[in-house]
Structures are given as structure tokens and as C-alpha cells.
Amino acid sequence: MVKKKKNNATSVVRNNYQENRKPSTVQTPVKVAEFIADRVKENVWPAQVLDIGCHEGRLSDPYRCEEDGESLVTGIDLEPSKKSYGEFIIKDFLCSTMLDFRTFLGGDLRDTDRLIVCNPPFNDETGAYGRKLLPELFLRHIIKLFGPNVPTVFFTPMGLLKNQRVKSDRWRWLRDNVNITGSLQLPINIWETGQLVHSEVLFINIPVKKPIMFLED
Image (cartoon, rainbow, N blue to C red; front, side, top):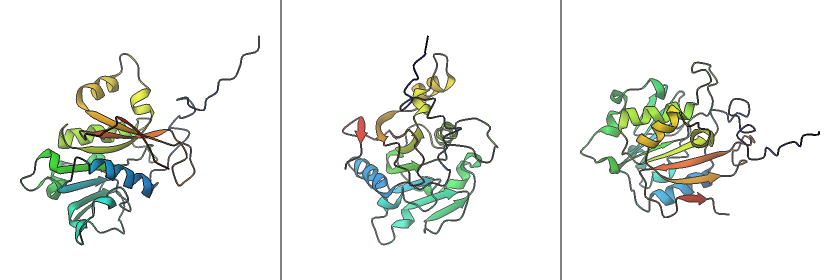
């Protein structure tokens, strides 16, 4: 009996984030950042923005509406950035504490007056975190530091939500702690580095008109 080969075009196996890697320094495409900001601004206009893994700041650029708009944005990354920020922190986000974010957490602001945007590394290129899914570690640390109610835009490979088991600790943690209000489904070839990666953008605590979204042409 000859077994038919499975079409793995949309399978989790083909999308193995350990083998089919999205480089940790890949930039958010400008059209994706602008699409996201347009949906966020329908209901949220933040007084403070935190860009985690900011690099060149493309994900937070659309919120720099004023001449001194960079003062609204706090950036954190492992390496220096050419972009100007109100505050810039050179540090591994997973090693950060609330004391690192005095500007973002300062002032008499409600959670809904703040916005977190994050396009985290999908893979641990240093080997420090083994085979753990880095986006999960980043999201857990965001919730740990800032609580479950801050509006958040979060990039992730499809496996974060879909590669689950009945007794999965991740599945229960996501269910009980993360208020996902929408999802932007990204084309697999959206990344400028050329890797084909199944990924999506989660809208957390952000009211959106459509729970499932697709990029416009």
C-alpha cells in the first residue's frame, strides 16, 4: 500500500518554529504597522506607548503623531536603536522589572490610556531558553509586569494558540489570563527576510469591529 504524502502547506509541522525560523531582528512591515494602528485608533488613543523589541520602531511609528511624538514612546531592545524615544532601555525584556518602566507607568493614567506593542523574537538564537516558545515567555512577562488589562498588540506564530493539548498549561493560562479581542491573519510571505512563517497579530483588550482580520490589498 502506497501512502499518500500529506499536503503540509498549512500544517503545524511545516511551520515548526525551531526549523523554519523567523530571525529575531526582522522588522515589522510598514503596511502591517499602519493597518494595526488604524484599527487600534478606532477605540484607543494612548497617552503612553511601550514598544517591546522595538529595534527601528516601525511598530510604534504610527503613534508618533506630534512633532515631539517620540516622547510618548518607550522602547526596549537588546541593542541600541537609531530611532529617538522618550525613554530607551537596552535590556533583555524577559529580565526586566517594573522599575525599568518608570516613564510608561508614570502619571495618573488608566490602563486603557497605555498601549503595548510587541513583535517578539519567535526563536531563541542564544540558546538561553532552550526550545521554549519565546512569544509565550514574552506574553507571560507582559501580563506579569503590567497586569491583564492593558491594551496590547502582539505578534506570534500560529502555534501559540493552535498547537495545544487538552492538558496544556499554556492553553489554560491563555484562557484564564489573556483577553484576545481580535486577530490579524498574516500572509506567510509577509516578512522581508523571505522566510515563510505562519503568524498572526493578537489584539488584546482592544475593541475591534472584526474579530478576524486580513490585510487590505
